[in-house]
Length: 477
Image 1 (cartoon, helix red, strand yellow):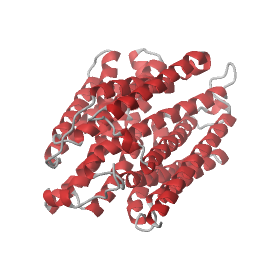
Image 2: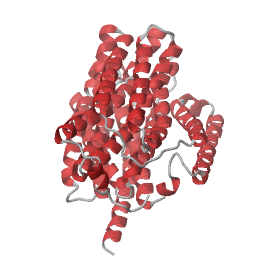
Image 3: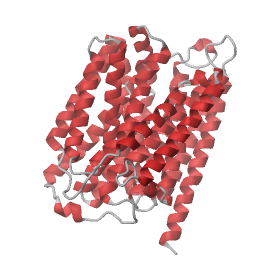
C-alpha cells in the first residue's frame, strides 16, 4: 500500500446512472446486514440446538464457532478474489453457498449437517469487505466514504437485529423455524446481488495464495478452538498453552509465506505501514473489549434471580436488550461521516473507545435494574458504531483503490479473532468467579470483567491517539 489517496479515475471509467447508484447503496447495506445477522444466529440458539439434537452445550457452541471460523478463513480469500476482475461472480457464488448452507440448517438432517450448514453461512462474512470495494469503485469519493462507514457499522449491528428475531422464532416454532429466517433473508440477498452488483473495473487480476490460505485456516482454527474451549484452560493449562504456541508458530509461518509469495493472500508488507498496523492493533484490542461487554450484559440479563442478582429474562426478552445497541450504533454510523470533516479518523477511534469504556463503567457501577442494562448497551452501541465507522477511513487513507477489499478483509479477520477472544476472556473470568458447587458466578466477577474491559479500551484509546499524533506530524511537518 502507498499513501495514494482515492482517485476519480475508476468513477469516471465506470459511471453509474443516479438511479442505479440509489439502488446500489441499499443493496450493499442489505447484503452486509444479512450476512452478519445470519452468521450470528448461532448465539441465541445454542441451548435450543443442544436440546433439539441431544448434544452437549459444548458441541452446540460449535454452531457459532464454526461460522466464525469459516468467515475468518473466507474473508481474506474473498478479499483477494474481490480485488480481481470476477468480483460480481465471486459475490453471487458466495451468496449461493450461504443460501445452500441455510437450506441445510432447515432440513431435518443430523447435527453434522447443521454444522456444515453453519460453516457455509459463515462464509458470507467475507462479503463485507467486497461491499466496501464495490462502493469505493462505483460511487463518488465523498459518497463512497459515507457508505463504507455504514457498511462497517451494519456488519456489527447485524447481531442485534438477528438475535431477538431468532430467539422469538425458536420459542414459537423451534430451532428449524429460527434457521428458516436465515434461509429467507439469504435468498433475498442473493436476488438483490444478482439485480444490483456491477462488474469490477477492467485491468485487474487476482490470484489466491492456496498455501497461505491453508496455513491461515489451521492457525485460526486453533485460535478459535482455544477461545471457545474454556474448560481446557482451567483443567489442562499445559495442553492449552502448547496449542497456543503452535497457533503462534503457524501464524509466523503464514507471514513468511505471504512475504515470499508474488501473489500474497494479504500484503503483509502493507500491513506493516504504521497507520494500518496501528488500526489493526486498535481493532484487535478494541474488539476484545467490545464483545466482552456484549457478552457480559446478555449473560447477566438471563441469570435467574436465585443467583442473588440478574433478572431471569428469557432468550427473546434478553435479545431485546440488544435493540439500543443496534439503534444507537446505526445513529453513530450516520453521524460519523459528518464529524469526519472536522475530526480526524484516529481521534474518532479514540473518542469511540472512550465511549465504550464508559459503557463498561456504567455496567460496573449500576446494574440493579433492567433499564441500566439497556443504558449500558446503548452506550456500547454508540461507541461501537462510531469506532466501526471511523476504522475504514484510517486504513483506506493509505490504501490504493484496487486493494480496498483485501485491506479491509484483513481488518475483519483481526476483528473476528478479537471478538472470539473477548467472549473467551469473559467466560474465563466468570468461571474463575464461580465457587465450588455453584452454577453461577459471584456478582463481583462481573465487576472484575468490566474492569478488564476498561483496561482494554484504555489501550485502544492510547493506540488511536498515537495514530492521530503520527498523522498530525505527517500533515504538519
